[in-house]
Length: 129
Image (tube, rainbow, N blue to C red; front, side, top):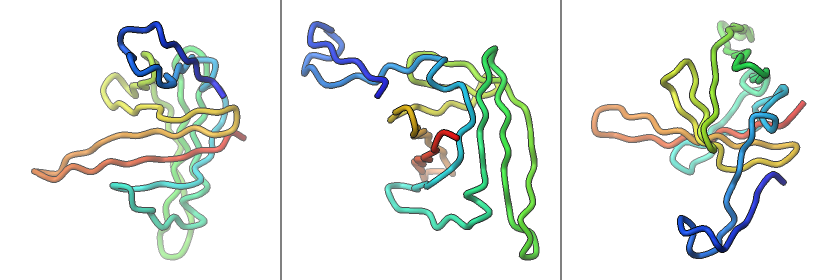
């Protein structure tokens, strides 16, 4: 697991484990395995579960998104920029996702979206390929 624990850190007075994410931890291809919206499991289709993110060094990310059209699974592949600051990944300079869990085989991203007065928190889990 890629975490460190320090009880001498004033920003963490309870001595809780602090997630430390490094760029090297993200590099590689990750496949979606599950997702939640406001702590409720989302029902992902076999097509959804084909989604991948491939983090490359130098700030390039290849996103392979899958979707169903007329009972056929189709996809789009796009390349975007990414940057890491502490445990927050910024995509294309604006969209941010927080890494809330990271092991050598699993990563969880959390992000929030607003729709009027409603706020939605999403967590997506990926496995390393």
